Amino acid sequence: MTPISLTHIILLSTALFFIGMYGFFTRRNLITILMSIELMLNSVNINFVAFNKYLYPQNIDGIFFSIFIITIAAAEAAVAIAIIINLYRSHNSIDVEDASEMKY
Amino acid sequence: MNAQEIIFYLIAVYILGTGIMAVTTQRIFRASIWLLFSLIGIASLYFWMDLEFIAAVQIVVYVGGIVVLIIFSVFLTQKAGDQMPKALKSRTLPSAFASLFALAFTSNILLHHNFGSASNMLFDPSVDRIGMAMLNTGDGGYILPFEVVSMLLLSAMIGCIVIAMKVKKEEAK
Image (cartoon, rainbow over all chains, first blue to last red; front, side, top):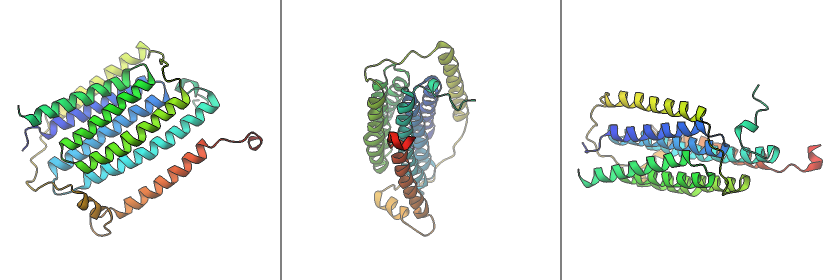
């Protein structure tokens, strides 16, 4: 058993997840909202890898989950930024308050 | 306290500090740079856990790809030195309260949960093992998700081009 236990790492990733959640709630700019989502996805990756390493060291499934999450996060960021640039062209702003046509 | 613990706490403070700066700073370009530092810290945490391959993927994809993409879109849509308007108190206070409450709640559960002991087998995340499992069609192989993800990346690429393509004026009519 290593001196740093699984609990420490999970506490770190929990704190990072809720930092991302705070940013997601307070930010009103689409790019910064995307950054908060990236922080949350990273904290989930830490969880997968830590559970894999400390509880099931004979498997490598958690590593695969992390790799696929990183891949899908890259695709998601690319599509989101394409949408943001398109929105900027039509609205001249990337504030979520200005994009309310589909709200009601 | 040995060196391993000290390094872990340093990495943890670094990740959380830069993460907090990334979600609270008022300048959007600085926020993306703080995010870059936070992602590098997470990569160093993977190095600390002896996962060189995941750390390399993290640096290549996140630091080299996504953050550069975010910085490009910041330059395309904002003036880099601009300050964003300060978030309203009526928004930050409930969000901070909700996040802190959720953090306390989850930490409370975590600290009272016994995860059990790991089996004593050796953890072997070597690149050749990952590569063999990635393209293995047999039991425990990941060839199907691999192919699905490659199709997803292709469709995301086509989707980006279609969404961001400039529509010519006469075509739009």
